[in-house]
Length: 333
Ligand code: ASP
Image 1 (cartoon, rainbow, N blue to C red):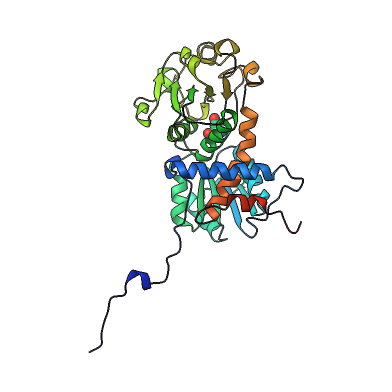
Image 2 (image 1 turned 180 degrees about the horizontal axis):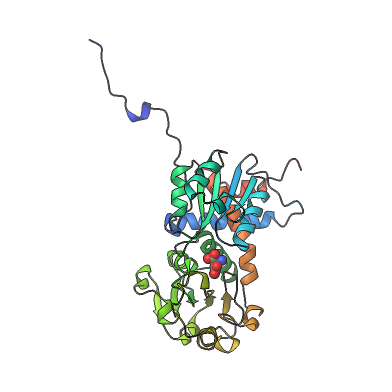
């Protein structure tokens, strides 16, 4: 009789490494964040050269799929992919077959047929990036899903804060305004607390969801609470997510008067951040937006190198050879 033996796992061919995505800040450990920020720092140094392009992702394809408006996020992902020599395709819902009623699943299947390595997706519905991850073979980056998550925004915010203060651990960040509709607030609370910062959410009770303290932050309903913070992070009033007829604030003028960030409400030296786009004169006084202590342009610059780091990190496996990647100049123009 034939001798049948069960093969030990170690004799089987090695499994391919699991496909990685960046869907939520919850996907990341503190070590992951440290590695991504270090990679972004080396990319920042590489951008100081005259020739800014690196050959690192040559032959790879990155698809940007945006179902919601975007200036900063879409342009920085596109430039990030180009700076790493990847081929890029950018698709906006307006003008695509989405206008003709195509479902997200069908759009994803169509794009998946080109075998992209990465799909960056922004969508008004929570969970849209997970759906695309299920129906394609690409690595997925969530560039904002409804009011849920915007992980690369949180990473660029961490990068900006670390560059300014030399640390994140032990700092106090006050996030002010329309927390209820903000994916940035949710992602930032998770990212900042993961890295050891103290976070206070400040806003009118109608715009701060009940129970949000469970994320590990504090909540204050008086604007004075920003006084003790090292960083005042201002959120946009997100009209597009407010249900018609719902009165979250009596009027924008009243909101600006009670909650707007003015020079008078800040301590000298307090740093101010905003994810953009800004409603000047509503949540932020133009004098604050244009002051020396505003880090808003630094955030935009950080967005490019952090998104380069995310693309690089997803497409390389195992420990990331950060210095090596950034040190390799482009061989052929
Ligand atoms: N640009 C950020 C986002 O996409 C913030 C905002 O729109 O207010 O969530």
